[in-house]
Length: 356
Image (cartoon, rainbow, N blue to C red):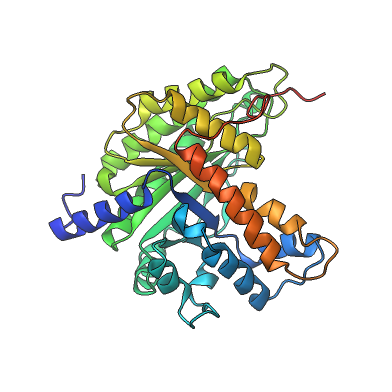
């Protein structure tokens, strides 16, 4: 793997991957496009403008104490060219100054595969190399590509075709990113939706991740310079069977033990619709039971951290940045403790409770 890369390129990729995988630190995922973050702002009565988005992202990066918990930040391309009002530096340079590795989301929009129900692939590979070069020149050190997948056992999804198409795409993304000097974060994102049980989730997630790493190795991806961002393995939200936090943690470690190459030094879990309390409980529990699994387990959260911040603005017509900053750092400290297996959840947090 990576035989086409120079020794210098490999060393740089490994260095960046190690920085992102710093134990006790994680990734703030703020790569939502203007429309997505705009809908969140408008839902609480705040106008959506480029300046409002810039102010909000600056708070995520520069809140006092945030850098102690963060190793990296995933940006939307818009944010690469915005500046900090603190000193006028572009955000990638400001993040680097703070010790937070800047990266970017380079993929485009999802496309529904004909004949596969609502299953999708992500678009953007054709022009990826050109955009990666632009992002590298703008100061980025990594990229992140998301391939969303839904479990629908009744419809036979995800089919072998859907799995193979998405995992091949992730492998090509990783190969191209590394060739342009950027560490790829590969993200197979299995949705929490559905009524499948935990055993089915383990089986399907194992199948997906096995296909992913096989595709990466076949493509010649340099695995030591690659990172994983994946969903927490959970039963579907509508699953009628209850599961404990311990059962969910064990299921996630089982999938990683069966599939994850030891060359990958960090797996950063997405929140994927989980509340912060559940996401932190599960991450901490995984770290407590991972034993000698040779990988850093941490977070790469967006909604779990950000949605409570937006709620602070409801009915006020503007960003309440000081209040948001204070709560954000409190959340990050919970996330950081969970990444070390030191977060102690309340009773019931992290359990799967069947819908009533």
